Image (tube, rainbow, N blue to C red; front, top):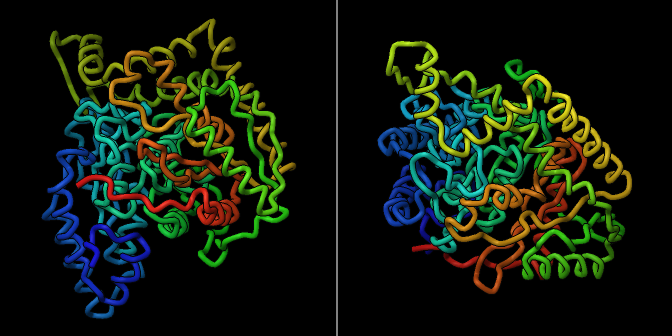
Length: 488
């Protein structure tokens, strides 16, 4: 019999409904798993077992009395450390917020609580979501469960690793330039960035407000479908949210590939690893054999993706992070009693190297005399990228690309060269710049036993169709791979 912690999201949902086990049984099994693997993976910044256990007991009492809050009552879910949970530390992986206790719940957290989910907060992340490897956390480095000498991806590395290591079935991450999809790809699981505006950002500590989006990570696709439906909706606290119909599980069905128009790219010149490129070609040929119409799209605009993204994102981070000044909340360092020194000392002590680098770049691009040359021009280029995607979806139904150009790289391999680290996001950033939804799907393993992920992208608010394509992709012989036990 499988250990409870190793069940898929679907199996846990069904098992709780049928009273095959209790939420407390499940949580205690998860605690045992945490005790076994956490010192090797380091997904959590902290974990309050007593509070989690209490939530599970209350869930079981509701179920036994016939008063469940929803079909999800008692399901455990991990929370990235930049999503506010009332009464919990929300540090964003940064020293400057090391002891900051959130006074309120993010909108997505309020929704989860109202349905009875068991929250596991404080999953590790790159500081303020700035990074692609979770090596930029101020507190610890999360490891990839398939090889603990490698990175899990970032910035939602803790959210991906906790699912891949079979500790939790689902988690929440945030995606500003690929921070859900890239770690999901490198950890062999599912990760979705919804359309910008589908999910409220209220209570997500902002990195780049026009790019950030909260989304789900799961060990099966049903977890993605359910969480997207739960989290979607207009929110008066976030004026960028859209009042669009929620998707339902009945809308997400396996599709016949015959006649479906699939956009692909020519991987030459993008430094794909040999195995990622080979798997991509194999999947394209498989789709063609099942009757899909394969159309090669012009992705030359990708050469602008990294500079455009890092100008816009850093400009917005420069503005957003100005609130962390040592006065209102967070770390306060006051060495001389002078106001300027308080700002300087607090921010110098509180922010890590990568955050400082991005603040400096963003402040420079917004400064007098440079605004039009850099930030203004980047915004114009962003419009071109958005129009490019609009034209793509007049020609195709869905776009297929690798999520990451390579499998997980080794710890420390790219930390000394920020440009190489930034290029790890070359296939994901255009999605955020254009606002469209995209999902990373498991696509088997490399010869070294490392996960390969494929990204599907659709037009705005077409998530039901996107997830249907994801189901269909997972059924292809070339992608249908049973993942091994990751770590013991």
